[in-house]
Length: 426
Image (cartoon, rainbow, N blue to C red; front, side):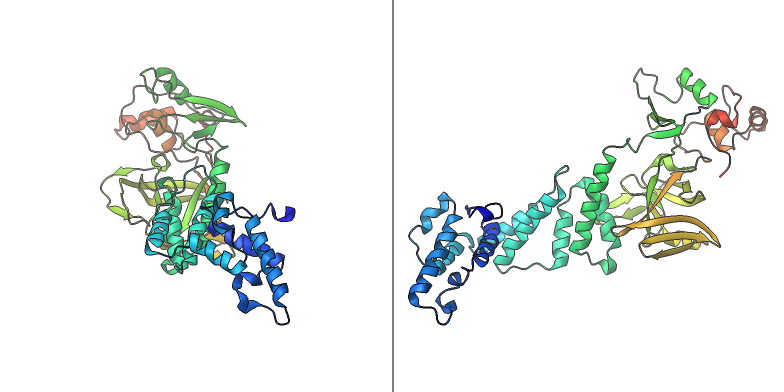
């Protein structure tokens, strides 16, 4: 039995659903499977004595893979069919209580963050197989929905996107499995990267920023060390509190959603303009409702080095994906092209952006445009207006201030384009 030891497990009171098909494979491999179906399967021309010996060989092979805790229940059996049916009766109790228990276990099965997705799917499929043995066959859509519902809140983004992208609202097991494996791979990859909330600027520094940091502006003055700078590949990664204005050079993933009514993001620091207000609610794929807390414009630098201005983007803190509405882009004169696992956005002869299909979603990688400042803080600052006005000179800002076109500032500083580390061209 050495060759089968790695593939077959011993039967216990808890693993019959796995043991049975493996044991059947061993019996077929050894050409000893006929006796478990009874005397009606006795081959023609086989003598009673030979059939009895074959039966006994099948019994011996089966009992080899029965744990001691179960062995005593079948120790006296010499007929393979009677042994097989006895084991079925012991472990395949097709009672209403057994069915209800399996259904309860299936519904209550929950995935835990950090666990292997493959292991979770194996547990899920094991329960499905046990129900099938009891003649309870669940259709594919119901299985897919149950598998989706087993995911925790931290995976809600995947649940919503799969639900929204399902053709005709029909979710399949392949869609869910592919989505889960891709999400697991993405999370493992991101685990080695810098936190996506880090604000990234070039290694050149703006003099306004330097002086404001020295004065304590933009940082909490309570003595807490909320700001950290780390040198990495010619960039300075600044992690700070949300009250500070920042720009990012990191690639961001945006989902191209043909079913979305408008552009959506949860990141307030993406906005170049920002208006608080009650703009209604959005309904999520899990039937949950999330509030739209603000609306504004987001300026992106696409992977084709073009600038794409997303207008009237909704700020929904509860959503975990950045969504671009293909319909809104159509309304603005852009042309969306989907096919062969690729997405292309063009306007006239200019290709504005490109994306690729990942699982069931079309994704575009883009950066926040370095020519736009992110409107985070409610209070005006010289740095904010300096960048917002295209790195205007000190004299120009003073003139606008005297005409009451800018808020009053305590102090103005001389800047140059190089000092700010922001490219003036796109």
